[in-house]
Length: 286
Image (cartoon, rainbow, N blue to C red; front, side, top):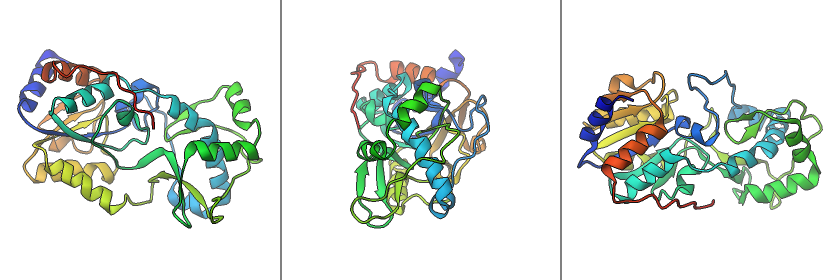
């Protein structure tokens, strides 16, 4: 990032309220892979239709997730997450809308967070709507598959986005159903082919419209669930700033586009706009 880009960013945000939309690019420095970054391999995430309609796909998902969710749970916020929390304490940032399910904004101490696509740490029954923690389900899955997760970890795994890991053989993995009604369990995450709950969308639009600037950090805006907020901001006369490595679907909407590390830019921005709001290093565990 050039000094001139930072100066333009500071000038654009000084004295103005900011809503932030984040994507996977803000979490790569915490060790969580990106879906569509310049160096990311091609990925084919499971769709909602595959999950609910095919027990083989569902078995594969739960086997991978049983191993991989622990990596996401162990991830810690990086300096970019902490910078946004610091900017919130300084009343520069109104809040964060995140497309990530990793809870790293909350762990960094961010208070106003809308988890647009849900979170990895909860599981929902599609029958009775009961919510349970992912840790509770992990204990049940471990009882049904003793030693599976530990054996897979010892083989050395590639961790994939959305709290799963690449596991080759899942054919013998045993799934479990809802302890309350026997219904199908699904992570409390919005899958491809599934809609974000309307109240959550309404809350996110309200956050965008309460601010004067929308800062997009680490998102290619490839999917409409994120792009619509950039479009709404531009349509209603708010400035859009995009911080992302690589092109995005919203580049033509941006008053300023910066291709650089989210961690570096957000940290520098916090130093300029929130010098008194010291980084508390808060880690609020989910």
